[in-house]
Image 1: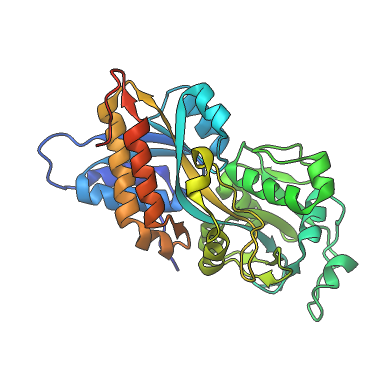
Image 2: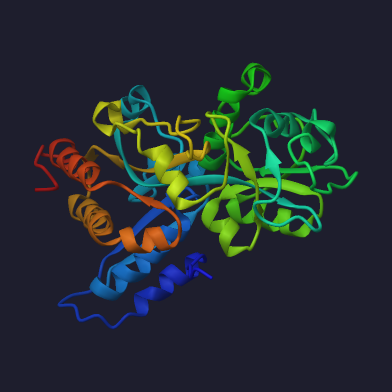
Length: 348
């Protein structure tokens, strides 16, 4: 089983490291997405061991992270829902991509193991629209010859908080279902027509594990950590694919970050025989003008270290590291965009 550090207390506890320092170590604060939390936690642990610097990160969902950075209560915000250039400019923010991964539908159906159940794109949408309510519905069994599915009600589980994971999931549903696009659309929080709400990826995972007959969506690391049964999902090419790091990479391969204004990039429903259709990136949000430049530099040092040294840990947790060329592009953006009150560059 892949080892992960989930609890915020575990990040704080890593500050007990005895790494030799000439002066008291810094603490950097952030809040937001639960999607990248497993890998951010591992990076924080490793970085603390090396430098003594502590990361205090609140895994509260992308909506909460955006609110906190706008309120200036944290050093950085984290969101899986990228902000468009107009919103970034309105609040004086910049964003950059830090990691990529997959959102995965998971089920709890007695006797069904990971990779056994196939769902077409339209069937997944119709389950979340409340149009398919039984696991043995003919539209599901037609794609699952030989798989015994029960005449059982489907319990839909979704996020209760404003969530970048939900943003990625509903972005995908909007692309593959005209009904979804017309009635609910793409947002961090929507008026779910059916189902139970869980807070964070952790809450959704807990509900699905508890309720037989349920389906939910979580970031892949949570599915692995909780030994959950992921599905085979039909992609844009019509192929049923499994959620794997290789298939996340296939979906991310076509991303041209150099042409993404403000690094705005959406990776759902990408072409390719093996592309996982619900792939997304996670972003860090910072103010362009920093009132505390020394603190902002500590944030940049952490993420610079993560770009350089975090790929192995990310891959172990089945995330897709940002390519080196993208990391170089981001560093150049730091140099040109992030300034102190006097207009001096923070990153040199």
